[in-house]
Length: 119
Length: 107
Image (tube, rainbow over all chains, first blue to last red; front, side):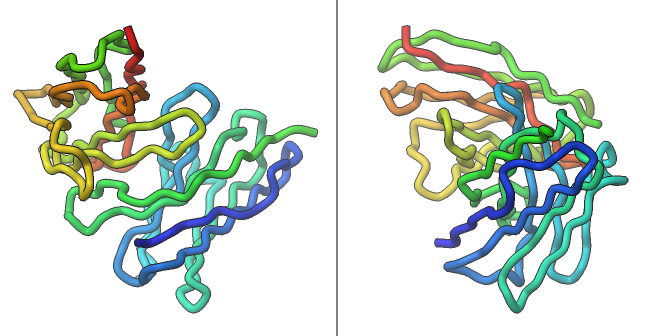
């Protein structure tokens, strides 16, 4: 059973860069889409983007100018950077994995990490 | 973006009840519709993908179906552990988008 664990700072100052890493254990990183999703308190989840080990990346157009995703197969990690953060970027950030069914269901999730943007 | 609208937004029901939650997309998404259950402080959990396929380990009291533009999640006999918030998600277009959620509460 694959397990995912987010890590990174829980507090980021406005205008700075939010950087998170997701560590994958208990399974391969080579055959699935790997996803970042965030969820502000009391709101619906927001899909940030996904990356495939071949290098294919899709970003949410609403965040595309500020977001970068990368993947390191040797470390079994993938990462998220969000630049020029504002208060509205405050949320629980989840890393996750799509299943290989072809329907793109998100079958495995990290526990989430709360990132607060505040000075 | 493809807008996902769930109804109702909240629902009160009793253990043993049959409940249905509906999700509608603002455009055609084929059967690229997934359902999740989320409990407070926890990550969402995949219940159903492809509109009607139960994810591994999900109890058979959960089922999904499609009728025209509507997608329906049915819980045939509510159990105490089913009280949670449910989200639909379309995975047909980028960005993938979620419904606003349906909070299922104990009556």
